[in-house]
Image (cartoon, rainbow, N blue to C red):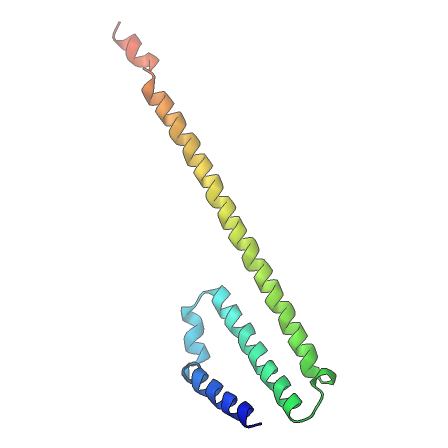
Length: 125
């Protein structure tokens, strides 16, 4: 039990700078994605600590509502991961499409500028 207590104290010291932050000050300066991740991570951490607290005190957390809450939070974490992966793949696809568009436009421009235009030859006659 002494190891657990010392680890808990170490965790508290490690998290101390985070505990000093005010959530309402932090949220306006981060992206919506980071704010959502922060909220879900906080919910998971709080429930996981309560889960461990119950287990350490000889209670069965699997028969408590905290288990369902952890499962629900994990589901949200998975949904957020899927959304960010889809968004990143869209960005990659958009980048590839933009590169193709620019490549085609540059080739088209170069081919037009390298061939003499018919209007300049008709004005010289």
